[in-house]
Amino acid sequence: MKMTSPGAATLAITGLLLAGCSGSGDSDDTGDQNQQDNDTQPIGSVTPAEGATGVDRGASVEITFTDDVYAQSVGPVSLTLASDTLVAGQVDFDAGNNRLSFQPDQSLGKLVDYTATVSTTVTDLDGEPLLDAAHTWSFTTEDGAWQAVKTIDDPNEGASSSASVAVNASGEAIAAWHQDTATDYSIYTARFDPELGEWQDAILAETDSGNAESTSVAINDDGDIVVAWRQWGTSNYDIRANYYDSATGTWSGDEILDGGSMQVSGAQVAIDADGKAVVVWKQGGLLYNVYEPGTGWGSVDAVVDGASIQTPALTVDADGRFSAVWTQFNYSDSRYDLYASRWVDDSGWQSPIPVEELDDGDATKPSLTVDASGNLLAVWQQNDGTVDNIRASRFDVEAGSWGSPILLEQEDQHNAQEPHVHINEAGRAIAVWEQFDGSRTAIQSARFETGTGWQTPIEVDPDGSDSASDPIIALDADGNAWAAWVQSISGGDALMASRMAAGADWETPVEIDNQTWGVSFPTIGVSSGQGDAVLVWRQSDTKARWFR
Image (tube, rainbow, N blue to C red; front, side, top):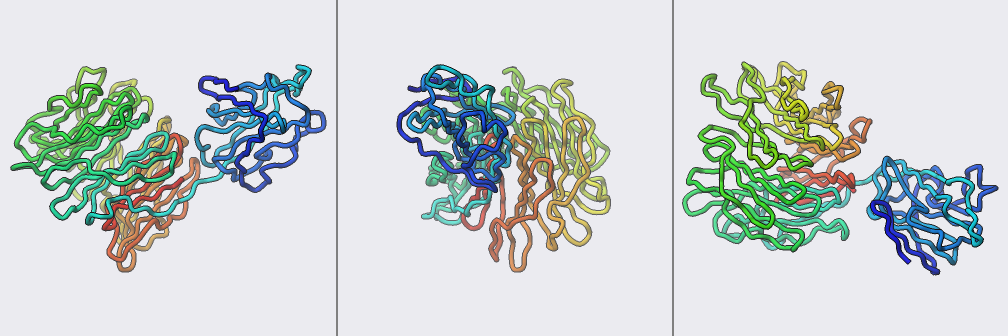
């Protein structure tokens, strides 16, 4: 029989032996229970063993009893597994071997301490509890590792470039890029199926003539996807998009979103938990269009019209509040300042407000991220009249306002450029950027903690001897971080990466891929729920590599 417990487990009972996956670690995965109550409790063995480390994240949790178990006493909460929260999964009972097992619905987290608990509701054949008290044991899972490099673009077409990638909580990923088809550049997408553990074949996102480029892609936890790009039309570039509905398994088809003859660029996309998608872009101001599930794309409108702006950044929080930042020319001071706006409660975009109006030079290249509560972090590059600096500001959702900009880096003599920031659900964030030190360009990072703010910057690649560029960053829900960048090497470039486990330091950088003629355009996505990260980059072909 099978029973279901919402949010916890399902139960199956059989008289056949259930083959469990073996764990791995410093201790034997099956062995005599070493707790003091072994002499009095009818427990034969547990899997993984008490205190085991490096345990396979796909392993089942098992306990074998030395006394016969009354099958009807076994339920969905007879054997549970938890770290900070209960793990969802299935409870099975093998009556022939008196073995109770728990199989998680998804892979367990990396380097996480788990505790298994057997309830006192399990009884013997006389209906008496087998255990005097709930029985527990603990183990620690293995870490992840970088998987093999995978070429994900269409092998029958030419060179590809300018990829973007997004990942949802279950580990489903979507990548988009443009690829030479001999007649023009076309937009392709490829989906990673976490259940199969494979990238699916690349498919065209559009079939019109005219060069297409500059992709942006987003995915929600249901698997709804939106991809946007710019494409040459009859006399100018258009902003176009295609929407994938996970419920029907179909793409809507590419559509032109903008409504004017002015040149367009800088399309950015975001999608909320309900499947509502927003695209913003630069076109005589900051314009946008909205996709409503069941309705489709609306009409073009403006967040700010008639202004000179630079490429925007866009994000959405767990409550469906979209936020955008962009740099806008201030004619009175002859410089670009950073502005922001939020879409709240279906009332449309709020009036733009300045994030900074410093008496410095231009603000450029903003990066924007949001935590689960709706607090925003913006990081950008700003010239002080002599060198470029990295600045940051936080939007407090409770106060409804942006904080004063702060200087992140401490190097006053040389340029700091190309910032990128990411925050996880709990509010832990890391920013990375390029920092010239007078002899080479290194990658620096600064960590943000809610309540304490920004910490002192450190180098991600302290032992590097050659210059680095194009840094990117991503964090999972547990605070583990991945940084990647392009590193100059003898005769070319290499894609490098480093990982920072929560509460630890940056690990020694590893080489992801290299070519004598170089790699470029790295982008990163992370599954907050699974703690898996994926890098996608250009190396003539579009390639991907997972940390899983």
